[in-house]
Length: 101
Image 1 (tube, rainbow, N blue to C red):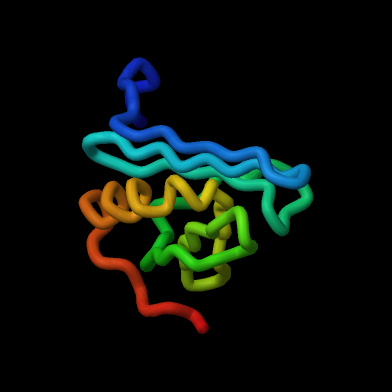
Image 2: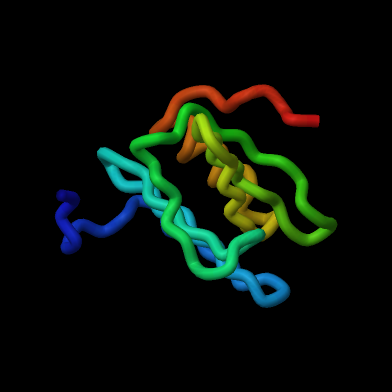
């Protein structure tokens, strides 16, 4: 069980058009949650994630896509956070997957 007193090295979040997304990068793990394309706020099951990538979602948001065997979890972030999120996730999770488009 992760120690809840440990602060993330990066904590990005966005409330966008009625949805919420958050990506938190710690020294030893990544945590994410999203309500985008979901009925409620949903934690991303990081233990099942097989890969990740960042894709455009709109002119003012990007999606961090966490891909599992069964589905893709999209976490919205501000376009200004795209580069720092990409660097932190590459360090924590390895190289991103190829673009889906």
